[in-house]
Image 1 (cartoon, rainbow, N blue to C red):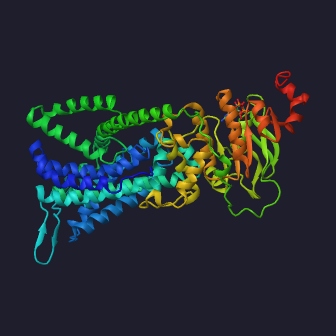
Image 2 (image 1 turned 180 degrees about the vertical axis):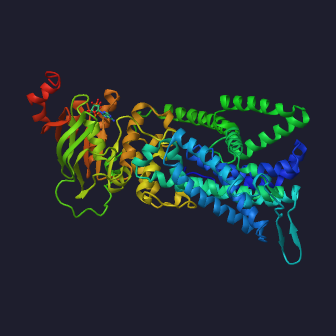
Length: 613
Ligand SMILES: Nc1ncnc2c1ncn2[C@@H]1O[C@H](COP(=O)(O)OP(=O)(O)OP(=O)(O)O)[C@@H](O)[C@H]1O
């Protein structure tokens, strides 16, 4: 994410757009087809930011495409507005505003429910265009007579009427659109969007306002849709009512899937394949209406065998080849040096102190829970727990399965709202706050089951967590380069060193060994320098050797911060912590030093008659 060759993609895009009119006619593309591809491509850039980068599958983009298109077309026809480009921008702003309102409603749901709401919204817009608003939109006749753009340069006037002359105008706007989108996806906002796509729960837990960023992606997609809708009217000299149809949204989804999601160029390529085949199958092969059948089969085959579309497939192939080369080189180097598997890292020298978050003046326990109770219907998971931890303490929590340990942790991090009781962190009452806010205050958790950003590399995972600390929970720095965020690289490198993953920084999460994934899980909780770190079974599933190393690691991490650890591995836990709280049936059974706990008969009783012995 940090390493980018500046402007390479932009330059290649510009060259491609300049050369297209010289090459594409020889491949059988008519200028009108190329122009339609550009409009779909621009429409699809926004959709790809929403779906490919943020993971939000919307079937309602036609509503925004139609809104932008009809606002611009209305201004340029019925209202007699003379400036084409200004009208296009007004259409874009109208679509973005509508997108904001639609997003507020649709983003209340996730997954399939989100997609269903967007379908319903698209249908509502289609109805409104055809009926109550037909006086302004022309109803089923659309709006004819949309003027083409022309620019008076003083000595001459440039007209962009149709064919290749209009291509210049459309290609210019496509280029602007792709440059803006590349800036967005390379910015901190783009990084957070990818994190949301991969694991929204963890993006919330590392301190990002996920709802705000999703809404941002929705508005960006709406703005692209609105501008492209305006261009559609200009291109055809007519704003067609079918821009609003569900069919438009569905075609966009399919074009993006064919070309490749999460690539920005996928919709352009997908539109190229789609429209070329449409022309070819209909005209050259004379299939008539049967072209849809053939295209449908091609679509199914592509989705089955190229899950990430044509561009995604090419990128995967490239990564496979380059990684294999890199792996071979690394293996050769390792064999030559025959070094130990775990790199020796001076963790103490690299340790990150917790960040001062303005709560330095508090005195007393860093965390205090009073009368904490959680009921799930008739089941009492936690009952009247009183618990306090002092700054700098290393506390362990143990208890048999189902004793309520994880539920207790979830209440402390505000993932679960207590039925009753209060929680105070660094002197502030945090009961009922959000996980994001609590993380921003400096209280984080590593999960019992790994919650990583699975399609990102180790470094990119940690970048997401560090960004939440350095930029706060929501910031619209969409056009800023991610490597210009001050302190980011240093903090990511120090976290990598602390969890012994420096050598694996650029490896995708999917290629990590289990023990490495567990260390990254801890790294994600540690990356934004918390003052209180909760670790839910950090040693679960590790080999004995990995446990020994991880305990060592946790001891060094604990320096200067407060740690609360749940684990079933008593030996490791007793070595790590200074004090232990034992939970049983949702209540605090006993508290004491590891020695006291080991010899406590009540604890031995709780663990099935002295398993501890
Ligand atoms: N969302 C939920 N809805 C209903 N019951 C729940 C929910 N979460 C936890 N419970 C119940 O609350 C009790 C405590 O569960 P919890 O996961 O907190 O225990 P635990 O001590 O962490 O167990 P383990 O060591 O197995 O992870 C269990 O009986 C569990 O079934």
